[in-house]
Each structure stands twice: as C-alpha cells, then as structure tokens.
Image (tube, rainbow, N blue to C red; front, side, top):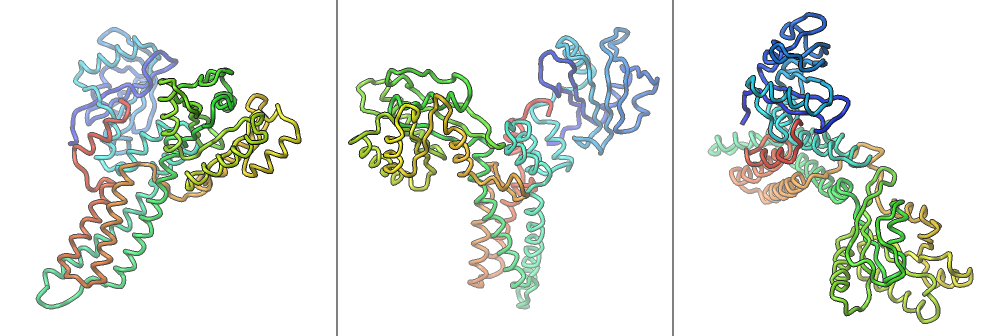
Length: 463
C-alpha cells in the first residue's frame, strides 16, 4: 500500500491568511524543490542538513513566485519517514495555488486525505492508534478531549498492550513448539506464568473497556437534556448557560417545537446541552412530534435536567411535583438527574422553604437573574470523574479500539477456560491467536487496506 511517488498538499487551512504552509513528501522531494529555490545563503537545498530552515525565493522558470521559508527534513527523521520539504509562503490564495499547480506539473501528486500520516504509520513512525489520535487531536475542542488525544498520540495504552501482546506471542510460540513434540508429552510453556499473564491482560482490558463510557462522552461532549413542562424556563436556562440568545424565549406555551443543542466547556470538559420541547398533553401535531423527540433525548442523554416553575408549586401542585420527581428517579435509576426549581426570584421565602421540604433533592435557580447557575455547574461537574485530567490513567475514546478490546477480552476468557479444562495445545492456540489478532488490530500489527482506507479517509488533506 506504500506508494513511492512524491505527494504535495496545503498543510494550513485553505483561504487567505498571513502565511500558508505547503508540504511535500517523497524520496525525491528535496530534488524536486531545489532547482526552483534560490536561497539567500546561496546554498543548494540538496546540500543542506536535515531540520534546517532557509530563507529565499521560489521561481517558476524566470518568474518570481514568492519570497518563502523552506524547512527541510531528511528521511528517516521526518513526520512521514521520507524526505519532507515544507514551504512557508505568503497566505494569498493565488500564491498558494500557483505553487501547488507548479509542483504538480513537476511530477508531484496531490496527497489524499490523511496520506502524510498514513505514510508515517507505514514507515513505523507511529502505530495505528497513535495515527488515529492525530485526527482526534486536530478535532479536539476542549481541554479534556485535547488531553485524551495527546496522551494517545504519545503512546497512551498502546505501549502497554504491545508489551503484554509480545509476552502472549512468546507463550503462543511455546505452545506451538509443544505441538511439534506432541508425541513426547512435554510442556515448553509454563502454565502458571501463562495464567498470571492472562490475569494481568484481562485486568488491563477490563480497565480500558470500562473507561470507554467516559472517554466516548468526553470526546463527543457530555449530552445533557433540559426537560420539563412548557414555560418552566428551559430555553432561558439554555441561553443563560451559553450566554447568548440561542433559543427563542416566550410566554406562549409550546414555543420550542424541536430540540436545540449547543456546547459549553466547564473545567475543560465539554457539556452538550439539549433544550427540548415542553412535556404536556397536546393536539398540535408538530408539538406532539417535538414531545416525542424530547422523550427520546431524555433516554439518550447522559445527564438529565428536569425543571419546574417555583411559582406553580403551591398546594396540590406541590404534591403532584413530588410524585412526578419520584417517578422520574424511578424511571431513570442509573442516570444522574438534576431537579431544578426555576424562577425562584418570583416566590416568597415561605414558599421556597415549603418547596425545599417537599423536594429535598431540588436545586433553586433563577435562569433569568443567574442565581444558582454556578451551583448547577458544580453539580454537573460532580457527576463526571475528572481525575483522569490530573493523572495518566488510560482512557479509551475510539469506538474501533473499544470493539477490538471487547473481542480480545472474550478470547482471553476462552483461553483461561481452556487452561482450566486442560484442553489440548492445538485448541488452546486457536483462542490465543484470536486474542493476538484483536490486540494487533488496535496498534496496527494486523491491518487491511480497507481498514486503513476507512481510518485515514476521515483525516484532513495535508495531514
């Protein structure tokens, strides 16, 4: 799959800017650029050392294209493992296209999405999980997702998996050796040491699998559904949290007909708030569809905010609200729920005390004045384990890795059962090889062209 031609692409976002960077990678990348570059130092690029920067002028024949900086990386000490030239030019779209088109005519080829990183993987500069982390790092939008991607790009849990996989390969080879001497009834693989390795490997896989629930929501943003009856202030709360007029606010019941989403960052973690349609009985077809979607969002959300109007919580309404909240906690026993009593600025201290006695789990806020919003934010952060931000515990956020870990764990369990039942070595080796296969899928020892194509197709061109 490793192609030997020279590729070129814009490494900075398209459009006008102060500067743009054009990246060229390939065996003859330096030779393709050198004849068209006149360095201020009068040195030829082909004679320059790796990891050096050169000021000069780029020419198209006798026509000056631009004054540029050229950064030189010689193989194998480059991102791709090949010779790499990076041309920093002025950020005019015209200049960018002139340079790109010129080198395309000189025999370069436009790079495909992710092709620079693919070449880095194929040249052994990084394993597959690290390569995938590059795309996650580029896409990170908050501190938590940035840290997850950065740790994975630096090795993350793949190094630990690789070490245990190598030990498993050793035992697999010993068991294969036993098959060659099956007639002599000998054991080359120490079964006690093998069991200890399997326990260690199973423990690692379980920790990584368990971490996916957190890693996945951190990567994508933690979904929080804001629900409740019409006119309790859901849209006002969303606007207050976002500090902008995202949702329409009106005294007319049923204003919100569909879910409105946006994200904010609290303590480095992205929270994706979903303002939903008010829940009530209605004959309006469009509003009813919105309410059905509200119930769907409540099921899908990781955290649920349920709002009530303080001014409405009097007498029989307060009893109904208590029953309603109890039913809510029973319906979602495994989901963190924040019971919010809004518009607290409109009620007396006496009513506030009565509501507090009837709804002891409730938080009091005024989405309009901002009272209680900070307490709400702290409550939301309390539901999320943020310790991984301060330590080096591995966290899985990649769905492909998660699936491979699940399959590897299943294979390891089968190996443990086979050992306990003292099955023949040939049957034991089948499950060991299955475990090796799925562990290798994570780091890239086991790959296919289709798999690599799917992974790198999600990268941006130029990376």
